[in-house]
Length: 119
Image (cartoon, rainbow, N blue to C red):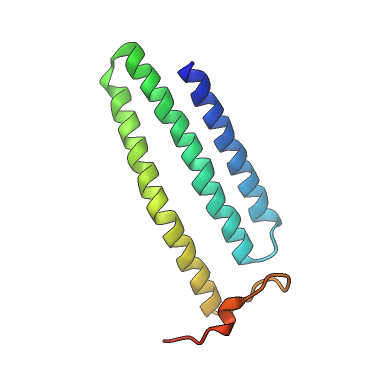
């Protein structure tokens, strides 16, 4: 049962990663591509990691081998680090792109250009 749940989480994660990769290729500007990449890494990687944690928990209860506990803990630490750094990194990239003069696609509303910059 746990192995099935782990497999479902991994499949969902792979689907998110595939859709994010398609978004990176298809979206018109750096900001919408960054949005696709952020969703891809957040949801895709978290679902894959959740699948790994579920698999490790199932194997730990089945075999009692401590290596699965280590696998689950390391994966959980990686997910926590990803959750904190992903949004911050994406914001920094978007801000740097905007400050360097990269304009969004004309269909996108640019409210940040209305704000006066403090340097």
